[in-house]
Image 1 (cartoon, helix red, strand yellow):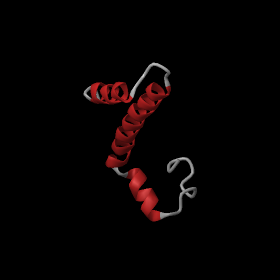
Image 2 (cartoon, one colour):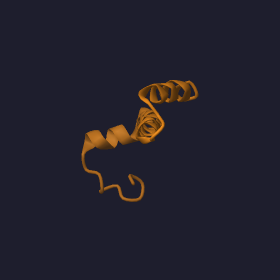
Image 3 (cartoon, one colour):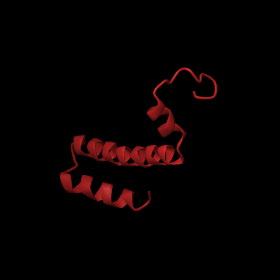
Image 4 (cartoon, one colour):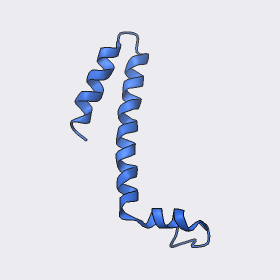
Length: 65
């Protein structure tokens, strides 16, 4: 966005954050955490699952991220 349309984002703070190396690393970490939460909610909505299944899933999957 910043290369193709430099005038699209006018806020200097936002531009600085997007250009930092940490930004995309943090977005990647957040995506992984949200995926774990989504999986837990899906399990919880299942007829046969209980809360322990959800905690186990989050704990088990978090070790691989």
